[in-house]
Length: 162
Image 1 (cartoon, one colour):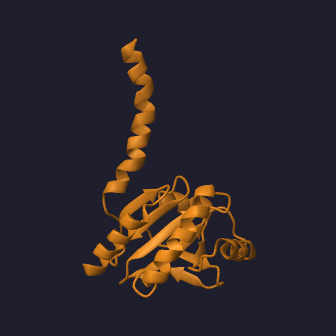
Image 2: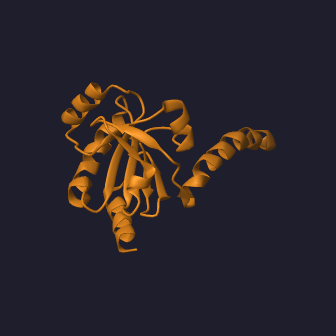
């Protein structure tokens, strides 16, 4: 009986462990070229030399509606030293995104992705997912869900003094 119950837990637990195990090791940032809400593009090499905060979010994600304005405060404080990028996962409508940015009052750039391919490539399984990327383009932290702003700021400060 106990053995059967443990077996039923084994598969979901092994899936969770495999999903979260990548969060604890540095990994190379995949190559990308994304369109921005300013109708330009940004490529991976352009981020080199500065830490980057890359949040994957959705228009219909309620947690994201809290997270994006919180990151705006850090963006205003660190925008000359740190790249901040908001990667939208559920629309490619620039006007909808601009309206959403005005409503939530955040100003850092929004990137548009190829949903099927890029979510898999970046290992994004839900929103918000935030990647902290070192100046040498390695993912050093991955947050799924809410971020503690103090922890994020400490991480950015550590990357800035490297």
